[in-house]
Image (cartoon, rainbow, N blue to C red; front, side, top):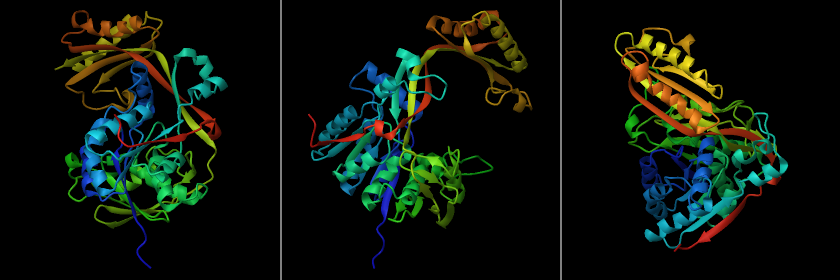
Length: 449
């Protein structure tokens, strides 16, 4: 018997604004079967929906062109297929842009697939779906911006089966981007819960890119990571039974060992025994991690049970305006002057009954954990920050105006004041049965004019 077939899957991005150089390096030297770009966070899709409203041809990832241009030649040369949710709120427009880029680079035979169907706003409105904040979609009225369901791996795997070189999606579950090529290449049954659970773990470990290589792990003096400026992104070598080894390219920075991997196993996991996904309820509670070489780790023990049949839906809606002001104080007595500034601002702004969710912070002293955990030596400099939500932009602007006015109406020595007003966008979650989100694949072949 020959060696078992090994599939090589790597991460090209862990979020929309991620670095591009590690992805280009992986495309060149990784001997990859798949390069996956995971670029959507909860807030990212609503921002993309707003961009699409402003420009019907927009709404896809702002770094789509840069990423595709950086990796396409190498991926085509090495037979690497690309999967990404960079379609964001407008996967069809993203696909057309990719075809234009490919044609300009001489790749006239590229086959691009898009997965659509995650936009479930009309369904949510028709059913007046309940939200986890106690409201309903109907109660929010025209304030609702978008409702996107987290689709599973099935449509992506179907696109690969139809010959797609690049698959672009909108909102799908993050691990599904990595699970789909395993389902397609190894013929995994979509009711084989154990294999799907293993695939979800692989996707969960890869989806945040540099985090697995120590980017989120680093804490100087406690958890040192070498070569952070050259941090590499991870790749996994996977066999048909779901066994996976994780590594990174030689000569890249970072580290992959049992410590970095164990942290990432638990990252953003509420219940390791029941990680709810659209394809399976994954069970990470019996996962074991074994170092098999320098920067090489084997992960086993994941499993799963039947999926719930319900999809998470992320609903974004307009929620007033956010006013913010900041000003700095430095030198002897900086903290006392900063505290006096906050007292003045509280008294001046309390007259504005319409303000909600007001925060009064001293950055550098207690802005993150509050006064209870911020004991110790007083800093030499602090920055006052005040934020509040208001129903109108005019009222929100009062926050920044009052902070700026401290130049001459507040404590001595204030400097560097800034003020902003921005629309507030809130997010809520809902559940929708999978039968109500009819995801489908559209294939686009050849060049685009």
